[in-house]
Image 1 (cartoon, rainbow, N blue to C red):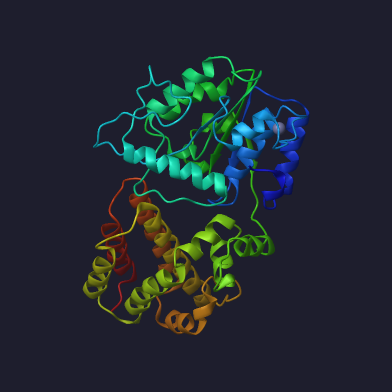
Image 2 (cartoon, rainbow, N blue to C red):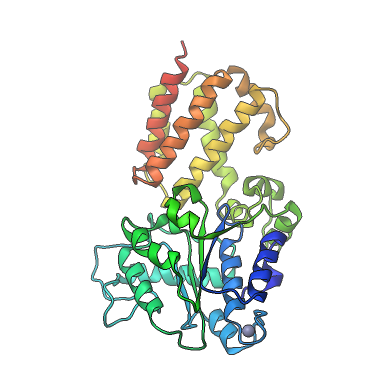
Length: 384
Ligand SMILES: [Zn+2]
């Protein structure tokens, strides 16, 4: 159960939500924004629980409504999120309880159902945890159609309904256009809560029709306590730096062996900057990503790589206060000396951002995306 006690930080957003609930506002749409793992899911679930709570809207945790949310079968708590839509097998499962098994076109394979169920179990266990999917996910049009159909009916338990759609930037082509009307004119009995870590990817009309609540970075102390609660040991400082205000990302860094991953990427980068030829660097990248991990894992590799470049850049311009990889500062400093000029490093940032985007959005494989980036690095640097 997401209660106030397990929301980390977020004084200001909580105040806004408190006022809204106390005013009894409904028929509106909220947009929670902030980095992955910062607590958007937790805050959305908490807000929904309060909105639906049968006991003084406190999110008491003990009334029938709160308990049903906790066991993830509240008929008026409609939750949707992106998931990998694995198409190959026979499709027979409807994944969300708002999908009517008789009329729904949103049917998916057993494998997809397993992944969705394990996502839900994971989030019930810890709303800050960032579960990995094996493949890139989205929110399919068929699910949005079912959601809209469900919203058109009356609430079942009481007189109100909460609709939570996570990561709405990851809606399938056509789905956001369909959903827009619901957001523009939310039914009087409903509260719509949307989340995204990439608001810049949303339709401007969707942005203008929602009340934006931006989550703030969680303090290092709270993240440390959160990691301790999860029995994390090892280099706390590293995980907190890598989380940069996001408890979910800090925990992920520890689960993910981010230090090991950082070391691998660092070896390739330092080697390249130190004089390893482009073909040899490409060879290492090809070997590394031959059996690339899951989609989310590769996406985090891009983040790690960005942090390495960022540190080199900061050292190059004489700022060494906020380094993410301070544990390898002497190697970084040495590398920064032979690194290209700050102007070229700036170009590298945009090249890397582009490579990360083609991997994320266009589903280009990890090895191709990374190799493409290094080829462009080489062009931008024009080293002798
Ligand atoms: Zn309650």
